[in-house]
Length: 121
Image (cartoon, rainbow, N blue to C red; front, side, top):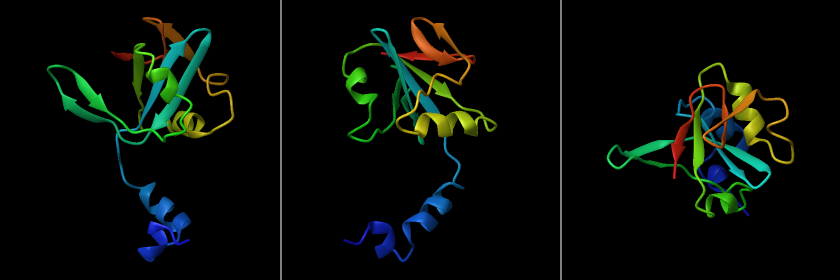
């Protein structure tokens, strides 16, 4: 099987390296569900509307956060600054405790960074 990147003439690692240099609005989406906290890095956060406030982001179908978003609970959007690549990488890594080594606080019952949390429903 040939991937789309290979059909384009670039091996997948080279394409990933190329895409890593394209600036986007990287964010960590978080949600509290029961006793658990869940979060994931999204590489693109798009503002769809200011009134009503609507944003869009994409998740993989097997994302561990996705089932918790379907509960209708509020989610937090943590827009990352240039110097927070360690946070972006942590929340993009599967099978680790993403909240263990990150300084987090609870605001409006949402796990969020020490920066202001934007609450969405």
